Amino acid sequence: MDAKRIVVIGSGPGGSGIAALMAHDGHTVTLLEKNGFVGGKCSSLEQDGYVVDTGVHMFGQGPNGPFGRIAGMIGENLEWCLREPMIDMYFSGKGAVHITHRFFNPIAIKSFLNAHLRGWIKPKLLSTVRKSLSNHPLNELIGIFRKLSNPYTPYLSEYEDITVRDFFTSLTDSEDLLKVMATQTMITMVIPWERASLADFLYIQFGTVRSRGFGYPVGGSSEIPKTFLRGFEKHGGTLRTGVQVKRIEVEKGCAKGVTTATGEFIPADIVISNAGIHRTIALTGEKNFPREYTTWAEGLKLSCAFIATKYFLNRKVIGMRAPCMFHCPDMSPYEMFNYLETGDIPKDLYLFVTVPSMSDPSLAPLGKDILIVGAPAPCEVSKAAQCEGLLDLAEHIAETRLFPEIKGHIIKKQRTHTTQTAGLTGRITGECIGLAQEVGQTGTKKPKPQTPIKGLYLVGSDAGGKGIGTECAADSALYLYNILK
Image 1 (cartoon, rainbow, N blue to C red):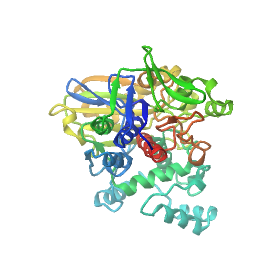
Image 2: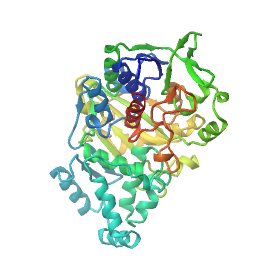
Image 3: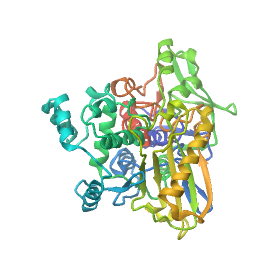
Image 4: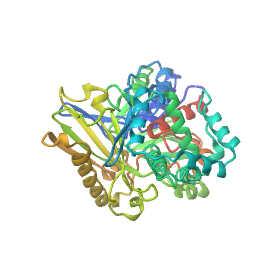
């Protein structure tokens, strides 16, 4: 491509990634970020000596996924902390199973055998084999495993219209195994398993296992966009924070640039929006799109939210061996996420817990820790009251069941939920990822980066990428780069 003037809206992993790649190729790129800091939902801020994520993060493929690929392509180094074990899977009222990067790690084997002998996990292996073979030909199951065992994880588009729940309930009646699948779906896709696309689920799970890169960036989550932006500015890109786009300008079906909230017009040959498909349509004006495009976009569903309480502690956390924990509730897999639709508060709650300072001690003052306790929630800002009730329960579980040692050692607690997320992104909802990776809008049916307006493109989790949340957004940047280069 001949050198172009490019404006990128938003500095999340997708926006900062494509901006860096295009600047590296010699284009004149201006990146506009409405906040006074970069990264969007993948950012972290310093507070009283603690570096605190705006969200609840660990990263599935770490240095071996799209983050590492983009950093390498622009000549930057993004350092990672990879701990072993990587996850504590805690079964409510029972204990933890340690999950490692390799299946046959002695830590993982010993932990699984201990859980099995204590009755924490009942996989019902014989009945699972019988049910699997009664519902699926052996060559089908072998074929799935063989495809996913390739050196490069393929995306099995033939399974994009099958839900995670329907597939795994056809394999087993073990509620313990099904509970793991339901919770794994929620933590990686942030939607209930009855909505989630099996193709995306398999791609995420096998990609994470194969990469052996589950971890956390040195310096906090914001180091991901900051690394991209170091390369961006090194190659002549212009970063402007605190600049909000009011309108994407279109003339005769072509993008011509953007107008900021202060009235400044910034001309461009190409406009790339990291604001999400719905917000991008609003910024551009529905009248500029074909009616069938806006009608289709209106029907696209969002992921759920992930809300959190952040504990600033004056001591180290000792209740975890790994830097993150999945707290699996003592509930049926068919019921544990019903509250997302009913609006009530469940009797027990799935939690995603991280201690970033366990990965990188520099993120907290010496001898102290930052503990983040997150839970799935509905994405509507109007349901803020339910979010508060969910965080009440999350804090009760954390302080009485998981980490009783923090009593008397809490300097302060800070809650974040949909209201704060919406303020961060400029959207009217507080979803965690963007568009849901659910049946009917993934794979071949997922929005592409190209829009009907010439020179206007989408980037981020809403457009073309695959993977977990922020990694999906970075993968989208690579996808769009291959279109534009």
